[in-house]
Amino acid sequence: MLSDIQTIERVLSPKLEKIDKAKALSLITKSELFAQSYPDDSEAASILFKAAEVSQRIGEYGRALKLWDMVYNRYNTYQKAPDALFMQAFVFENDLKDIKLAKMYYGNFLKRYPDHALIDQITIILKNIDKSPEELIKNFKKVDMEIEGKKM
Image 1 (tube, rainbow, N blue to C red):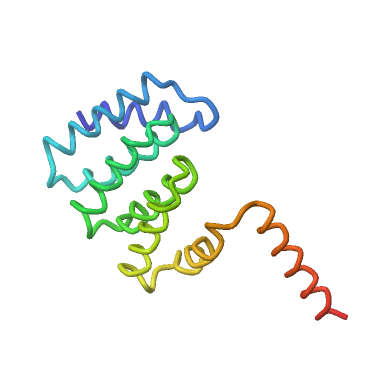
Image 2 (cartoon, rainbow, N blue to C red):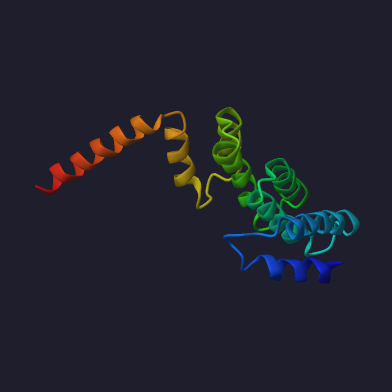
């Protein structure tokens, strides 16, 4: 089973632009089955994380969220467990446009990983998440003007 997953991963990886949805779905299903059959295998968390990434790429956002949730909750010592939580927030914000849930997940990240490298990025996201594109542009212009004023 692991060999099948790795073979499909190799086929999908180079094709960043266009992805074969049938192969992607096969990879995701086999990855879920592998993790279910061998939950203690050292590769299970990594396989689920990759399957979540593929799920997001093909627009299977609910499945991606479920897989990242499994990584975060079942394999919380896995090095990418924080990334799994971040990606859930990212999908809610950018793919599903559910700002309320995105804020909740970003907030959970801040509480759970206060020293993580993504903290500054998440803080900026939360500061701007409710702003319209027009408000963001206005703020960027204001900052640019302040920077230009300091140069003179």
